[in-house]
Length: 173
Image (cartoon, rainbow, N blue to C red; front, side, top):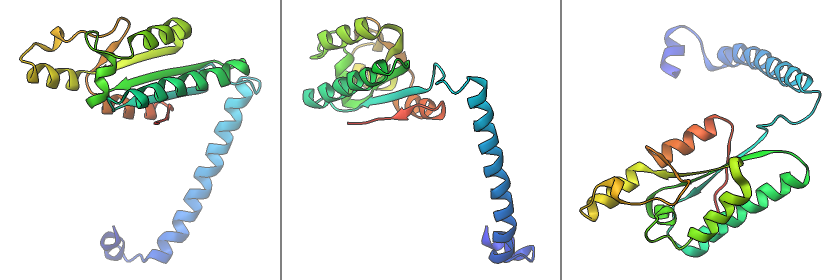
């Protein structure tokens, strides 16, 4: 970038002056957009205002319990304020074991959480991890059972990036 600026006869100082004006305009636009959005709802929180993604990449039971406890605490905080929230738990790598229908140590806890939170909770399992496990066990990926209500995503890490792009907070234990 510096080479390109020098080739055009610009130095960093002139770029900084031009950039500062552009940044000021951008900031003013963002403030105006935010104010307009708040006005559209009468200052009340939108239905999607509180969204969080919780990754699970560990097969450690204590870590998995911590994630589920964090989910409960997050939801309880906003429920007490009568504000809706949306949660997605994404399991990948060693954390995938939490969602396996045949070996999960967390089956009861997850089923209870799904029952309690209903549509405000999505639980996603990584297909890449499922495929890798299946290969190591000489099985087909679809022969690795998932807990009821768990959705599959092609890639856990890509799903987390997508959620962040949609405004979800990334909350890890």
